[in-house]
Amino acid sequence: MITALGHADLTPDAWELVREDLRARLKVLPTDVAGLVRAGAGLPLEFGRMVCEAGRSLVVCLPERSEALGGASPRDRDAQRELLALAEGMRMLPFDPLDRDACVSADEQLVRGCDRLLAVWDGSPSCGHDATAHMVAYARAHGVPVEVVWPEGAARRPSDRALRLSTRGRGR
Image (cartoon, rainbow, N blue to C red; front, side, top):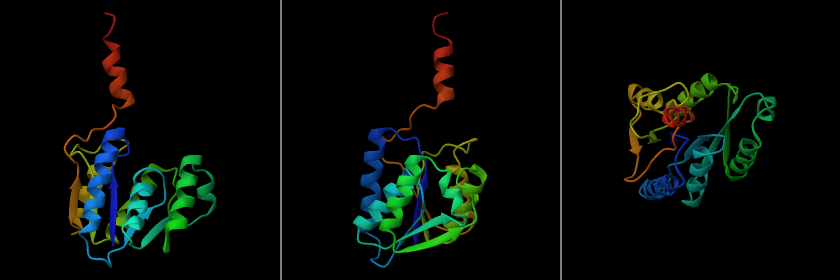
């Protein structure tokens, strides 16, 4: 099994570069390698689509409690439905998709259940809302090989905090 985790705040151009990179990596894997994702919008949905495009099996992880899906955003619910339609298998995990810490714990379970992690990561340290650096360190600590996916020219959108800081000094 292989999974992909990473930054959710990529620029539109970066998404295209990352998609190309992930597709190329999926092409060279043995044909029996399946993909594993935690149901949701963004990278999980994109990676799930690519896994299926490459003719591979897809396993989707869902919260154990079905009512937890009801609190998801419409975007996430649509992504969950599409991933379930693409999936050949499901795993149930005990997590609340609206709880960041629970999602990090669920992602740790995904990593432990994989043979490789594709990390869409710019190398930045972990912060309060993005756990990508943590997941890379976690995978490495558990002996899961990590391939960093950060193509030349990839970039992240500025955070709201960075935007506030950059505009604060204007007009002085």
